[in-house]
Length: 211
Image 1 (cartoon, helix red, strand yellow):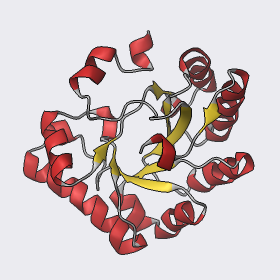
Image 2 (spheres, rainbow, N blue to C red):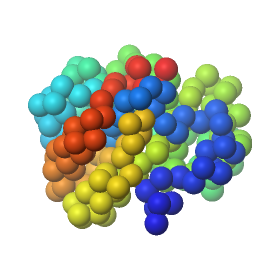
Image 3 (tube, helix red, strand yellow):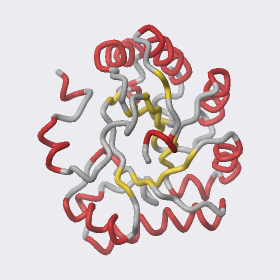
């Protein structure tokens, strides 16, 4: 059951240069796949109520499509990571295409936002040894997670189960800025904060949690 929510230790040990957990004893929230018209502003408004800063792993094409939403993410003090240009499953394509996907996403952020990306997260959580070598060449850090909320299943009870049972004081939690999670995303954030408070965990920001 736990594998559904947290990667097994053997995988973490196999890729030690990947960031799996917060580097300090604080929880970090992250949001994949945006920006989107249906969810981004809702997420930002909810985060503002708690004064929480997070990292959004954005798809390059979405940054191009909704630059005003990506700008709003930065304006409100959050960070933006690289999630490839087309949400590509990078283990299914060749090295040249992987490099192109990552570079194009970085170029989209630089061109539209004048923002240099430092962190990468592979779509679908799939990557390989080749991915790590590519990221080393591009001077980027691979950031995975230690708690997958399954919010994309659009079932708040699943999200609550994941958070209640698997949230740790150094968890990197992944939510989604997407159509699939839009209906439950604000309630998911509310519950994540509630559980963190009950467990007396602090919530950190990307600068301290990923440094």
